[in-house]
Structure formats: C-alpha cells, structure tokens
Image (cartoon, helix red, strand yellow):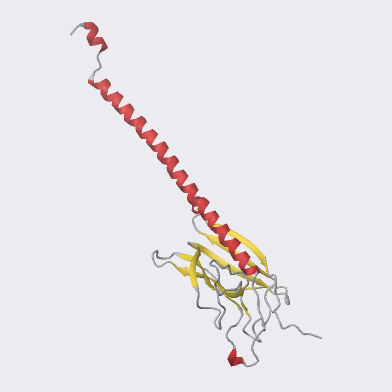
Length: 231
C-alpha cells in the first residue's frame, strides 16, 4: 500500500465515530417525529373532548328548552295512560333529570310517533372501565305512566367529572337543586323552572385538566298546558 493510499483510507476508529454520529442523528430525528406524532394525537384527542362536550350541551339545551307539562287527563283517574313530569334529583358526580319534552325526531316514515317524548339524563358507570362514569341519555318516544323508565339509552358524553343541574324558581327567585312536579305540597306541581343551569365537566383536557362547559337554558312553556275554555 502506498503512502497516498494510506492517507485516503479510513481507520476503524473513524468508521466507528461516523456510525455513532449517524446513529445519534437518527435517534434525534426519530424522537422529533415521534414527539410530533404524539403531540398531534394528543391535540386531536383534546379537540374531540371539546367537540363532545359542546355537542352534548347543545343537545341538552335543545331538549330541556322544549320541556312541557299538561293537565289533560281523563275524568276517571284509573283510565290514565300517560303522565307528564319534570323530576330532578341530585347525585355524585352526576345529577339526574327525567322529563317530558316536545323534542322527539322521527327517523322513519309513517311511524306512529309525535314530537312528544320522555327524556332522562343521568350518570352511568362504564362496565368495561373501573371508576369511569359516562353521561347517559334515555329516550322513550311514547309517554306512559312512568317517566323514569323505558325507551333506549345512549352515551351522551364519556368519562365525566361532574354533571350539575340547577333550576330557577319563578316564585322564589332562587336556584333549586331539585324539582318534582309530582309532589303537591313539597314539590312544584304543574309548573316548570324558568331556567335550567347546566354544568358539564369532562376529564382529559389540556395538561390532564378537566374541561368545563356551562350554559343556562330558558324553558319555553313553564306553565302546564290546560284545556281551552270556550265562551
């Protein structure tokens, strides 16, 4: 081997240093792309949580604003086949609300359904994940004598931290934690609250912090519907 050839050749040490630098650069590049991918995935998950909360609150507002009561009943009580109601109870981490509303949407043609329905919102434990509570929605398209059962249940928002409801009483001007139109003395017979304040808190926000959504929903028909009186 000539002196010029030896000058142009790489030593084993130089090859090892080059390989080490290349491996380090590859690791840094992989880490950068992996961080971007994880950041994008985290951003998408947080965006989905905000979208889920806003959609749930909008649906609740639409349905609660259409709540109604009616005093239309047969003269003979035993002939009654339906009962309208607005029943609100407290719970942790989710309150419960059962009511009748003019918010049903018919999804099929020629079905024997109107715009009236029974609705419920309540906390429901996820059977697949310990400690996880979802906000559930129940709807029955036919109003019967039990406004708290029947119909189909769906998840409105997953993994909630709080679902709190307050009710503005027109007579006292106070926000109540409960409401019950079935009770004659201790409840609020034949009348609905003027407004419902809805607070929904979801887990899994930015930095692991909860995401809070708050709205106040006015009820369009706070008084019970009655028979018209002719003259």
